[in-house]
Length: 393
Image 1: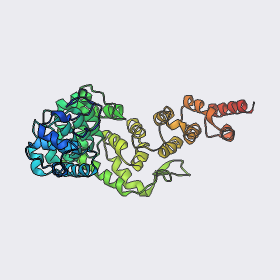
Image 2 (image 1 turned 90 degrees about the horizontal axis):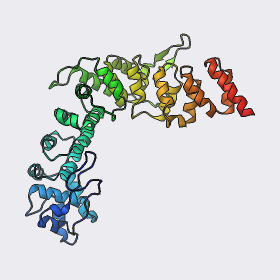
Image 3 (image 1 turned 90 degrees about the vertical axis):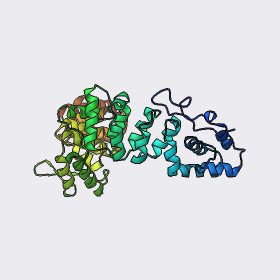
Image 4 (image 1 turned 180 degrees about the horizontal axis):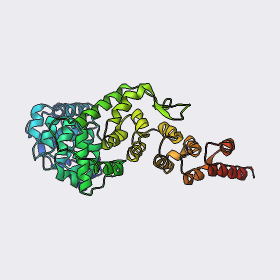
C-alpha cells in the first residue's frame, strides 16, 4: 500500500475550487509506481525512486513518485525525495514537464521553482496548471518569472489573486505592477489582497501608464535605488524616528541619516510611493506616512509590514493627516494597546469622535494630565475632566 499523499483541502487529482491545492491520488499511477510506493517494497528500490530513478516509469510518473515519497513515513526515503525535489535532475525535469504531468505535481514544482525562469517558462503554459499554483508562484517569483506570469492578461483577470500576489511581490518591476493594476482597475476587478488598493487604484487612474517595455524603465530603476538605500539604513522603529522636531519653528525636519532616502522617495510618482509604502522598510513608512498626498499616507498605515511600535509613534505624531489617525482609531487590534489609545487621545489632530471614545480607557493620572493639557482641543480636556469625576464618584 502506498504512503499517504500530502493532506490538503482538495479532492481528486486537481482542484474543484480556485483556492484549493490539487492533490495527487497514488491509485491513478501505474502498477510499477504503486509497487514502489508500497512501504513493504525493497528499500533499495524506494531509495532509487526517491532520487528520481524509476525503471519502467515515464518521467512524469517518476516525478509523481518522488513527490509522494517526499511524504513517506520512512525518514531516510523522505529526506532523499525532498533533496531530489530541491534539485531535480535536468533529464527528469525536462521529460516530465508535459501535459501528462499531474496538476498536483505541477503545483509542487511551481512552488519550488518559482524563481527559476527556465523551468517556469515551460510550467506556466501547461494546460493543467491550476490558478492557485500560478498565484502562489507569483508571490515567490523572481523578476523574470513575474514578467512571464504577468503576460497572460486573460488569466490575471480571471484570477485576481495572481495580480495581488504579483503586486505585493517586491521582485515585480514597478512598471509591471502599474500595468497589471491598471488592467484590474479598467476591468473593474476588486483586489482586496492589496491593503491599499483603493489608494493605488485612485493614483493609477491619474497617471499615464507607459506601454510595456522589454528593458527596465526609469520607474523600475528608481524603485530599486530606493530599495537599496532603505536596505543600507540600520534603524530601530521602536527607538528612533526619521524626523526630529525643530523647537524654534515647531516643524519637523528629516534626520541627516534618512535624507538620501527621503530625497529618493520624493522623486517618485504617487503610484510608486504607494507601493513602497506597502512593501518598503519602516524608515520608508515613517517618511511616507507624512506625505502630503493622502493616498500615500493612507497606504503607509495599511502596510502589512507595519509594526505596533511604529503605530504607537505615528499615533502621537502631529504631522500626519486625520485619515491616518482615523485608520488607527478604527483598528481594534491596535487600539487594544494602551499606549496607542493614550497617544491618540493626546494628539490634537485626532478627530474628537474617536478621541472621546478612548478617554474612558485612560488611567486616573492620565486623565488629570489630559484635563490640564493646553495642547489638546478644549472638548477633549472637558471630556477628560468629566470622566475623571465619574471615576472619583
